[in-house]
View 1: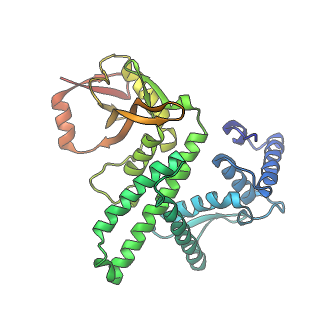
View 2: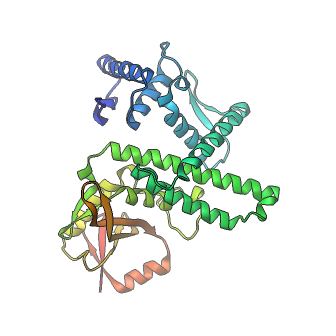
Length: 331
């Protein structure tokens, strides 16, 4: 089945010709939705947006199964983008941005709790064939185990602790589902070669594990609630992380001062923020090849600690590559 490309689904302008073009795509997707065809994440989002904006009798998003994920993403971002800090706002057709009323909030929270219960069953499965689900389930179960240790069963007998536990648990699970859809979208929107970075005479791979690990552990600080980690607030968006790291590593490689066969640790400064990037040799199972050894992006995070930055300055030479980027090389 033919899928629409990223470029085809981009709305270029508000001209009549562009409206005719995108309407044809919408009607084709609507027919496929009625016939329960398989959609890519970008096609779901396009169709969902079209339904919300349509002034014709095209139906409601709730009428189509393919809209379940876009509906969830909008609910999740509405309430958890601000970490459940009121007031909450939504875009309503013909009204613009409006505050969410009490009845709608109650309805939405019930929907989110139901989604959380269903997704929890999914991530408790330990042998997914889907690689994204497999890696994400491992990561999510690890977070849930930590939460269980923090809130033992005895403590959960008390109402306040029980409510706190349930809220934190739902946050972890819903965040996991949001990451799943994000990672799925990134994989669908790029070619396999886009995740391969030539560096230090080798090929560094930005894998499903890399993206899940970094996004799960080093983004969304209010959701993770882990002061031991540092979080990305600017410069790097999850959907473009593989592209940005590719560009940065290509610049660093020009000075030919890092051999990843000798070190797994790359420290650089980008737009005045110091970052730590780990690239490690790992074994990965590949279809038709069995277990193969690769250089994999393991983790990537900013360094804010003054003591750590002072230690880097004391033990590394800073090599400026351009106005925005410099790399630290051990003295």
